[in-house]
Image 1 (cartoon, rainbow, N blue to C red):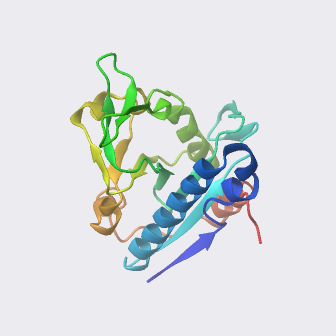
Image 2: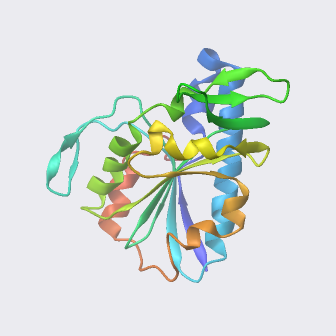
Image 3: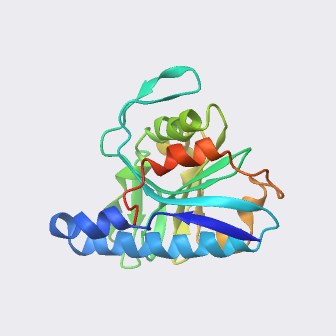
Length: 210
C-alpha cells in the first residue's frame, strides 16, 4: 500500500553536525538517508499502512503508560516505524568496511581490512533500553524492537550477541535485512493502523517539521 513519512533523515546531523564533527557527521547522515530509503521501500511493499518517523529528539520529561517521566538529554532516534500494535526503532550505524564485534575485554570494536581497530562505544552503551522507554511512553504501553542497521560492507561477528547495548533486547543487522523482509517477522502484516494521538505525540519530537 503506502507509508506516511514524517521528518527528514539525518536532519540534525546535516543542520548542526558539520561544524562539530565534519566528515563523520556527513557520513552518518548519508547512512541515515540510505536506511530511510530502504525502510520506505520495504513499507511501501506491505499490504498495510505504517508511519515512518525520521530524526526524533528533544526527549525531556516524556510521560505516558503510567510511568515516571523520562529525560534522555541529547539522545535521538534515527528512524521509528509505527503501527497500531507495535513499533520498530532503528539506529543507523555507518561503520563501513570491516568486522564489527567485541574485543577480548568485551568492548565494542571495528577491525578494518588493514587490521586497524577502531573502538565502537555505542556497542558498550546500556541506554538503548532507556531509549526504548520513549516510544513505550508515547504509545501508552505498546512494545516494540530496537535495531541497529550497518552497511552491507560491515561483517558482523558472532560476539555481538553479548554486546552491552543488546543485553535487554535488540539486534544488529546489515542493510540487506530491510530488503530481505527481516522485519516482517517483527511486524507481521497486516498491522492495524496507528492511533492518531500517538502519531501526534511523536510528531512533537521531529527535528525537521517542514
